[in-house]
Length: 117
Image 1: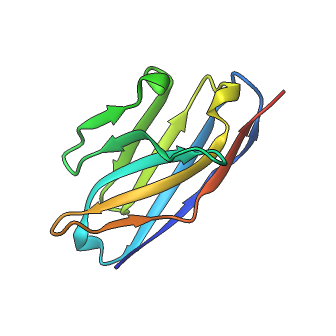
Image 2: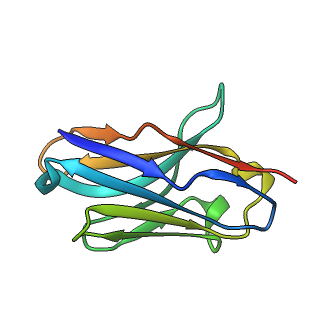
Image 3: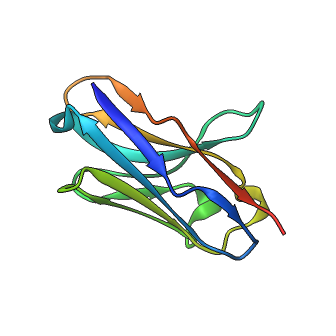
């Protein structure tokens, strides 16, 4: 099992920045690709960005050039730097980890990001 704890969400004005963190614990040897997803009420949970163990990244088109995902393998932590935030970035952001050795996937509890003037 892998446990994930997110932090860093909050309220920010349009154009502002936030940095989300996702700390993993438990069976950390099992950690593969790490990612961030977001979801609004009544909507599906969508991928925002992901990063493999080797550092390859993937971004949703809507955040390219504004968000940066990174990971510190020594700390078992993933980060999402969000710049130039827009109203439509408002959502609950969830950390996700895929197992290296099975089809298991793990989710954090979510952190609210609200972009509002």
